[in-house]
Length: 101
Image (tube, rainbow, N blue to C red; front, side, top):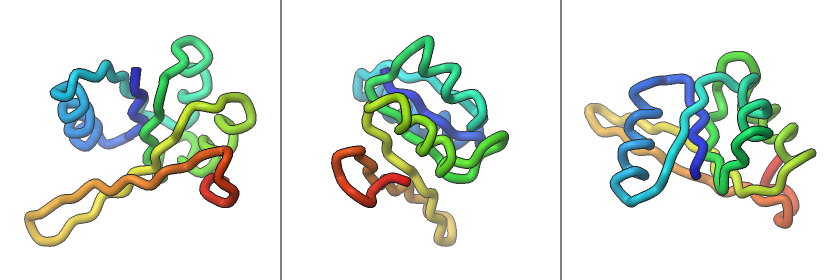
């Protein structure tokens, strides 16, 4: 299961739809302060994490997740230019120094 942590419903739905079309099972959490509680119950194989979140920002979420869990985390960033929208992903691994707070 892939956990999407995103507070904007349209963006979360876009990412979820894309992953589900590829056959992945996804779950969505919309607040940073709800992530740890969720992953304690349903440990995801991967987290796609927004940086700007309600409740707790993505950097702090990443720090707290890294203290207790080892699943991969991808930070996403939305880029807009005119009517075009891109979602970029950046990896974060505990084995790669400096890639995750």
